[in-house]
Image 1 (cartoon, rainbow, N blue to C red):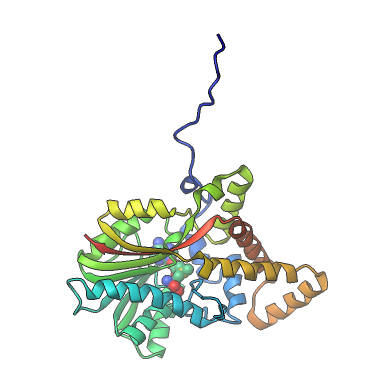
Image 2 (cartoon, helix red, strand yellow):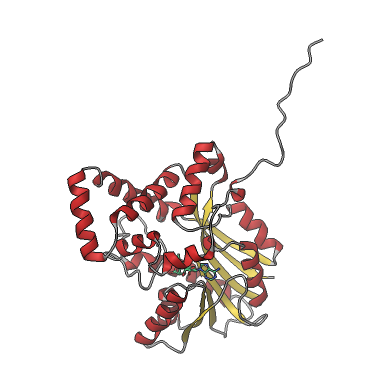
Length: 322
Ligand SMILES: C[S@@+](CC[C@H](N)C(=O)[O-])C[C@H]1O[C@@H](n2cnc3c(N)ncnc32)[C@H](O)[C@@H]1O
């Protein structure tokens, strides 16, 4: 009799959620958004086309729409806001208009929420540079104090229970070390039946864990973006349900932003090949935007390697507090 050897497959196979940026700390996030680590050079580079002192998200563009522009950020914000306000209008607090913006960055989205939708907005962000810049932007655009900002942590919001009829968080949870803790906080500060939306980067499990080389590429992606780890689409769905947030709608919009970003990365890397061109542009970029092209190059390369292999998706979620 022959005994067949069976390969034993562990049920505890590490998933992409278990892959962490090994040295991440919150000071990396502060560095990226306060122009004090090399990853901030990407924002200086992008400031040639977009208002990066107001908007820090990757945007949203349909074919034919120009992406490297402030309008791309606004299209993403409008998409989230329209879905949020539909839920709000059908909910129990339709007459209230106070929005909490978790990780509000430099305030562009919150100010837009006031201008376009007439909302009162409280923003909270962990990076002092961003919170101060946002407050300054609100004052200069004459929407303060209806739009105001505080320094605070998304996983310990300095706000009362059941105090908001509307909450959003735009492309920020990626940076949070405890995304479940963040969602629990959102559920805590939302009034029962109130509406919530968020946008975030998601790791695609199979692509990120397919080989050791892929895992390494994925870790490098986390490193260049100062991200501790990413959730998957399914892990977010599960956590939302567990913390008492009923998911109403989701969208994966990768092709309207990250795929476009990747095409820009390909062009950037191709144009970087001739040494004379790279060196000339390096001098120009330093003079024009204060950015170091070598840092931008590392950021673009680390992003492109992961994006090209389909490791990262971009998800939008709309939910209501149970
Ligand atoms: C990619 S930016 C997005 C900002 C803004 N939502 C926008 O769309 O322009 C991410 C923001 O998250 C903030 N952030 C990161 N970790 C945070 C935390 N634990 N609590 C609050 N804010 C945080 C950063 O300071 C940064 O402003």
